[in-house]
Length: 488
Image 1: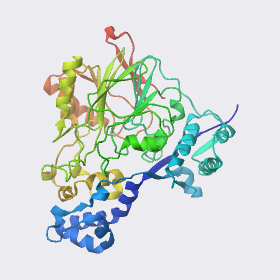
Image 2: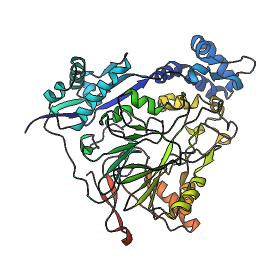
Image 3: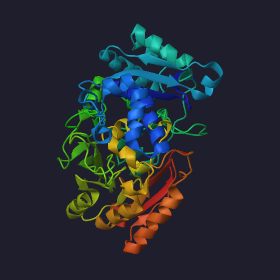
């Protein structure tokens, strides 16, 4: 059997942009502020003392008026709204092997034009059907060295062809890790917020979904928003440059939200689509994609409910998928913010479609004042998000600062009732073994069911595991949908 190159099961990749490097430079200063605030419960004192301790970072990157430190505390505008945010490096590691050999690596990219070549190599490796020689023949000498470094780090290997899966032929939706979904129609597949061979994965998984498993099943990709557990550049580069990718339209790039379309074009993607909310549906194969608002998950609390600048927003999309066999609206981490409410969007959907076959959503009730003060628990993207409204540091861990940024069980039940959803499925609750639910699924399903019952809503909650699918098992008129394994 001919050997092929593919990603190893435990490999992890991570890209870093200019904003990421800036966030890493700020991190010790912000951690010092939070540590001092926990001790003193006085944000003003914590800010001033930490600024003395990190004088250069505080002076160069931040505005702090000693007479009014809390209200004035802000990143300087060039760092809030960087004119450039190019991806600068790609790190790669196989944690299982690295424990023995310490052989992870990083590719520094000084010329943005090189990203298209890196993209090509990652895509060719991701397919899982090409030999080392075949990939080298399509790569420059520099990229052959890059491929060799991936092999040396056991991030990719030339071995027997990787495991393939034969997915059920029926139309439906499949639950991949965390916020990733795969929608299928009779002929077309759309992948949502993919995380493959990602630094966000939890260690020690015995089975996972690999890029090679998806080969031949993905015709387009949908990105919901800029948070890195939904927006993972190395995963996206494992797909062909000509694949259509729909991303949110970002009026002004900021530390809170990158211009995702520009970033993908920089990486060599040729068919990037960013349209206004409620634009005409986008057709990919026999599926229609309706681009809808994403409200919620903004760094706001009642005491500080207006961002320092109106352009500082976590821009995103929710999407309604329309096929001949089903309609599905997935809400990701949406909720309510001063710009609008998903309730308003649901009312418009109800008027347009009458009812929806399935709603998919994160059921977790999240607020930005509950994320804790240990920055090692935050992603670099969340640090950037918090710095768009840093006064909310004063409410971290305090009940009076609570502001539910996602729907939670109550909001999910309300949305299901408004759109008369036949079924509702949880997702975006982290990683788990194939064939298992995530740790929070059971309690969140119970809480959401209680809210549905209280409302007299007949939407059926569907418990499902990572690697399961929810499929149409008969013609749409027969109203038959069923959950069963897809990737295991």
